[in-house]
Amino acid sequence: MLRHKARPIFFIILSNLLYALSFTLFYIDNQIAAGGFGGVATALSYVIPITPGLLTFLMTLPFLIWGGFQKGWLFSLSTFLSSILFSIFEDALLWLPTLTDNPLLAAIFGGVLYGLGTVCMLKAGVSAGGTDLVAQLIRHHFPYISHGTLIMIFNIICVAIAIATFRNLETAFYSIIAIYVAATSADHFTRGQEKVFVSYVITKNAPEPIAQEVEQRLHRGVTLQQGLGMYHRESQNILMIVVKPSELYRLREIVDSIDPSAFVVFSLGSGVFGGGFQGPKGRYPEQCQLDNA
Image (cartoon, rainbow, N blue to C red):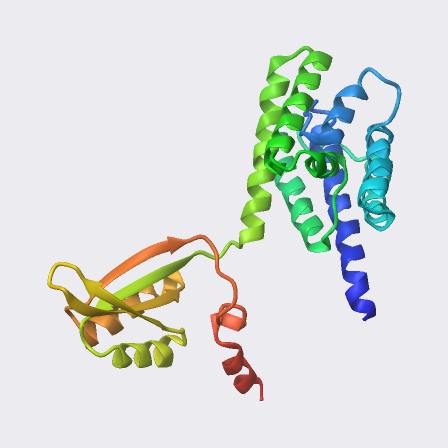
């Protein structure tokens, strides 16, 4: 029970630490306004004698109060914790040296670090505050506007403020790169890095021999579907099998040795979850338990 409660807190702390590091190590000194209140604060801190972390919190505070009335104070409390942690971490880590003076490298690597922070925030299951919070509050009154559209609008406003503050169009380009890399990295890490192939084996013969060989030799599940060949109007057996790239050649060997006339289609997938891909080396959980017994 204690572990279950400590997990979200751990990810809230870790995510905001990663957010803060992306700003202090890459964004601030390179004048990159990487979206959200943090990006706006990065720009405004050059003209207002207030630290970026404190500026971010001051901009977020009114929306935290609004969220308390609209969504409940428990929701606002978790978001408040996330917001204040980011502000504390960012101001506390301002002494760290910028890792690169190249704005392009800063936008790329800062974006990756920020994307990792987003993944941790998703694992925590709370709002990160900032523009994410604002988007949620606005959608409560205008549900027909998508969350992604609102975030895009806020990012455009952030980039516009950066251009007006720094009076440098290149700042906008690097900021856009940073925002894109952060979003792409978060999506990549969330969906999983392991690519797989979805294989469809279409055969007129009995499906059991192929299914048994695949289960015994590859330890992969097989899903049977019934189909109809429209040209000859004949019934077809369709076997769906998900395999790793390293198992693709062995699957082709199995099918070819049992039914050379089978029609096989491979489709590349970007990630996989469950169904035997969670255990060591991608084996079934039951097999892992037998091996460890």
